[in-house]
Amino acid sequence: MLDHNTHHAAELDQMADKLAADGHEKAAEQIRKAVDEFQKGNLYLGLALSLVKEA
Image (cartoon, rainbow, N blue to C red; front, side, top):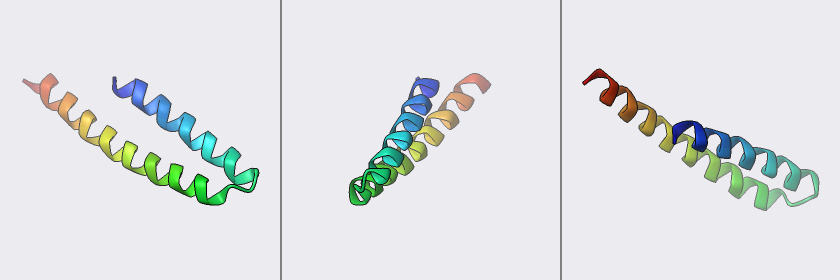
C-alpha cells in the first residue's frame, strides 16, 4: 500500500506541473498542498510498517 501511495503522489506532482504549465497555477498549488499531506501520511504508514516488522 505504501508503494502504491508513493506512486500516486508522484503522479499528482506531475499533474500539478502540467496544470502550472497550462496557466492553472492556483489549481497546481492546491494539488501540491495535497501531495505534501499525502507524503506526510505515507511517512506515518512507513513508521507503522516498521513497527509491525519489529514485533
